[in-house]
Structures are given as structure tokens and as C-alpha cells.
Length: 67
Image (tube, rainbow, N blue to C red; front, side):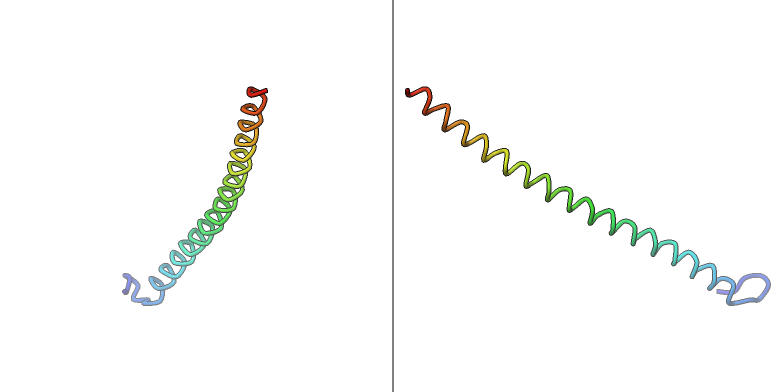
């Protein structure tokens, strides 16, 4: 991996910089992924609670219709 001015380290330095940028991008994506997973979990909990409320209200309506 040599460039025209016969400095073999220049291309390695460029590679290291590119590698560092990619590493940072990956790190940011993992962080974003983690945040999204937390949001999904929170929304799943909300859905579960709403389904429980719906079931409870449905039972109450059936009881009221019987009376």
C-alpha cells in the first residue's frame, strides 16, 4: 500500500482515519438502535396496558348489558 511519494505510512494513515470514521458511525448506529429498542419496549408496555383496559371495559359493558 504505497502511494506516489513512496511514503507507505500515508495510505495507512488515510486508512486509519477512514476506519475511525466508520467506527464512530457504527458506534452512533448502535446507540441509536439501543434508544429505539427502549422506545419499542415502552410502546409495547403501553399496548399491553391498553389491551388490559380494553378487556376490563368490555367485561364491564357485558355486565351492564345483562342488568
